[in-house]
Every structure is written in structure tokens, then in C-alpha cells.
Image 1: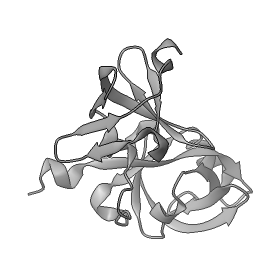
Image 2: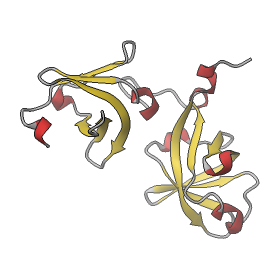
Image 3: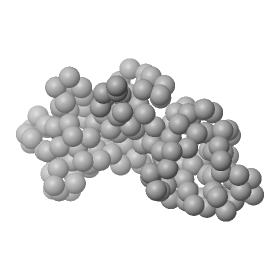
Length: 168
């Protein structure tokens, strides 16, 4: 019998298109180390379970070949699919590194502004990741310059944003 914690999943990438005639797909990911041959992933298209047969880097993306996806026509059915894997099947993260799923739902408090709301998603930008917080979708930078402290045990994030931030 498995627990809900054993079934917890993390989004690890998104299929951005097909590549070639062999059935490879282009995958956009923030962490290529999450991908390895033999890893079972779920594609959001039709909730389809797939096993990675091979991976290779290509420009800023990965090329991924899945077992049973043997040509471009089969690969095309995966276009746009979000890929997720069981968290227990993924490599451990280095200290002070978090998956988006770890942060979503945490309460964010600023030392000057008080309670800002809960993290609803994470926006990944080239220069910094941003917490998307509360009903107003405030973008809170995940940078040490703002004294960001993440407390996983209490599911809280504290920060010290500059004056004027609330007017943005």
C-alpha cells in the first residue's frame, strides 16, 4: 500500500515539439538532472504514463525518446504535454533548493508589509525565480538581497521587500 506522500508528483518539464523522424521530443526543463533513462513520467495529455528510453542535450533543451513512441506521428501526440514524475524517483536536491511544489501553498510575510498571501505558482525568469503570491499575483523575487527565508517545517516564507514594492 502506498501513501499519498509516496504518490506526490513534481512537474519536471514540458514537451515543446517533435524532433526528427525517430519519435524524439524537445523538452523544456529547469533541471535536466531530473531526466534519466528508465524514469517513469506522466504526460498531462491523456494522463499517459511513459518511460524514458534515452535523452540527449540539444541547444537549450533536451531531446527525449520514450519507450513505445517510435515515430514523429506518435511523438506529435505529446506536443504541449506537461511531464511529471514521482518526487521519490527524482534526485535529491542540494541544500536550500526547492521544487515548485515545495513552495506552492506556503504563506509569505514581509517584515514591513505583513502577510502577503500564499504562493500560487513560481515564475521562472532568466535572472531570478519569482514567487507568485496572493490574489493580486504579486511577484516576489527569490533573491538573498531581499532576506528571503524559507521555513519548510512551518510552511512559511519571510522577506524584506524595499519601500514602494507594494505600488508595483
